[in-house]
Length: 289
Image (cartoon, rainbow, N blue to C red; front, side):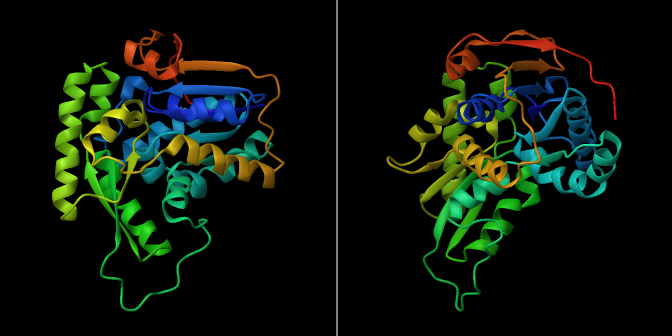
């Protein structure tokens, strides 16, 4: 039995690393769907189908819980898979399985409220709201999930999303940091103009962006807090597994890394983030459930 981590590319390694630190004895399986990355520019139907295929593979390899370490998949595919697909999978496999996303823990961290605790209506809405800039893919921004859910929990906080359309691809392609720095500065400037002032806080709403979190910190005003999804997700999953003992995530500390791309040793950018060389095993996904 294991804990599966699925992403469209290597950005989810930021989530994987935090989970490995929080659950050192768990067996973790990482799958990067690099053959179809990035997800942010794909249709909703494509995102659901590709996410389901990745989860199929992870369940077939023994995962009982799968973390969608991808904001786009979490925003677009998670609810559909949970409601219309998972009941059949549980019956067919004969064991408890679930898929969890990373947006809920992020919003809990941003608002200081658990998902089930919605804010009481405030009338009138405060004039000076706490502005959070959300940097994310085009599909995540189009879903407006951060604006909608933050508003449900805290009416004194407002989210303003900036679509960083090509940034995930640039990171996947191991683009030089000088180029990434310029692109990020442009997106921070766009978000600042949309808000009308500098943001009070920022969310890196794509796991790829965690790899260049330092460039976001440099582009934002000094001292602007960054909400780091890996920490929020690992803490939330610890609370979840403490409540749901039916999910066995293994005990032998096994680590497997797969990609639907060409595989091999990852580039310098990922190695710098991960702290050591990392090799992804290539595989071809075929529906198995």
